[in-house]
Length: 315
Image (cartoon, rainbow, N blue to C red; front, side):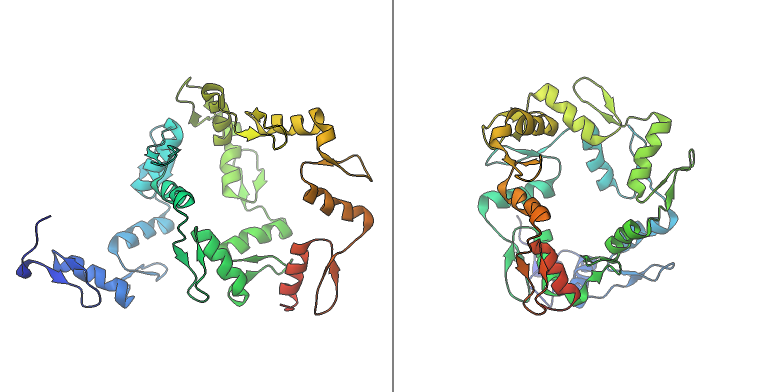
């Protein structure tokens, strides 16, 4: 790489980075100053880059200028369209150099690589604990700083985002804000409404790249792909026999291998894990082994004790 002459580059006053154009430097400096000079005229939200403001405007206008040529689904950004197209083609262009596993997105590959390297790039700024995934760090921060999260007013659940809380509250209120314009059936989530609409339209946007068979759901296409690949991803933990479908594994474990599952001594239920059986047995015995050290109230499950402590500030 050729070295730029001193007169032709601009150095950041906050770090060691250099830029060939002053405009690029000015844009970079915003990372240090935190300044967000581009403001949305509708909701007054600020952005560091003009491109991000333009993309944000689509939230208000509802415009989705990038359209899929297969299923006509629209997207606000070309990146999301390109990623969506892989759902139709089944292509997984990003390959792990260690185990040869393929991934649809580079971000998924980058996250997978950490399994091999053991690297934990996400660090808590308070206790300095490291995590392999951003989600793990967020959960840790949520549990460590409960005063900054959103609590459901109807139950003891907490959420890191208000949007997730708002979605959860619908479970308690029974509200179904998304209504089908054809049969008036209502749904709690827009994704479920979109899936329901296909019942009326007959649309099957997910196409098998091998035999061209179409499906209404991506999960059905993914299950169908195993017919061509011969892959059997569901394995019995007792005899190691593999199955193409989860239902096949469950049938094998419960019906064909009754003696090797864990059977409840009080009823006819069976369980694949002893830990699950132990929890179930408490519904018969009434045993509550987990006790709060503040008020001495007891619970059948460890997670129930945790939410009790959070709700009553007994932590």
